[in-house]
Structure formats: C-alpha cells, structure tokens
Length: 225
Image (cartoon, rainbow, N blue to C red; front, side, top):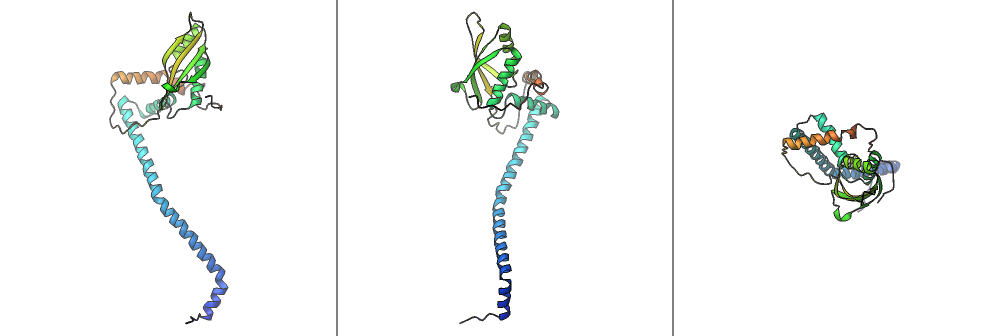
C-alpha cells in the first residue's frame, strides 16, 4: 500500500530540505554536547568537593598550629614562609645548589665537589657528600652558618677533616622536604621549650624574608646531578 504525501508537504520539504538537515544536525550536536557535559558534572563536583575539603583541612591545620604556638595570623603566615623555604614541599635540586653557593659566598669556604649518597637518602631526605677547602676562619664560619645560612635546613651526619688541618673538609649533609602526609591530627600540644625553640629558629632565619640576596628564583641551569 502506497502512502500518498500531500503535494504541499512534499514541496515544502523540497524547498526547505537544506534548512531541515541543518537543524537536525544542530540538534544532534547540541544533544552530544549536553550529554558530554552532563557526564562531566559529577566529576567536576567531586573535584570541587575535594578542593573544598583540602582548603578546610589547611584552615584547620593553620588554626591548630596558631593556637599551639600562640601566634597571630600575620606571624603565622610569615613563619610558614620561612619554614617552606627551609623545608620545601618537594625536593628541588636547584635550591640545594643555590644554598651551597650562598654558604660558600657567606663563609669563604669553597665547595669543590658534591655527590648524592643514595644509600642514606629517602623520600623526605637527600644526603650529599660535600668536599670543600678554606682556611680556619672559613671553616669555622661554615660550621656556624650551614644549618640555615643557605636558605635551606641542613644537618650534618659526618665530618672529616684533613690531617693537621690542610684546609680540606668532607661532610655528609642532609636536605629535607615535606613530601609526606601530615595525617588528620586534630590536636597539637607544644610545651614552652618547644615553643621557644620554634621562636629561636624563626628569629635566626628571619633574614630569608629580608635579605635581598636570598631569592627563590634560582638561575636556570642544567641538572647538576
């Protein structure tokens, strides 16, 4: 059985066929666009919720630390900047080399070589075996300055001095980073001694925010390792 199409409708289709096809195409494109965005909504919402949780967690930790060490918000912000410079969130080889160069310039103790001690390094600690030369004054100045003087927290596990002080010194020094989860601690208690130690560290390295010579925009270099 043949279905007869009204001549008027047939002519209408012929005259407007292109427009009908364009509209159908637009409807298909819009439909795909809407479906795609609808699928993205849960993922984006989850990301937003994750960021909100992270921000709230950082606020809670800031309040926790501030209350524990009895600091104002401004003092806490300043202290966080100092500790972020001393112990960055992730290891930065260029800041290590920059710290060694700063120490050498300040103390006149010339660092001649450094190598990574992988056996004594970990995710949160990088140990270098550093060799250097200098006179007795340079050596003593280096020992006074190395903990914070380069803009990074440095500790020393081992020190070897050449016989009869020929001016050659070898040290096993450690650099640290905060590449570690701080957990969900809800309380923090510091005794007076610990608060005093924190204040002393902040006062000692406060030059990091004041001296123009200390700059976190390290010059571009090839990886020294």
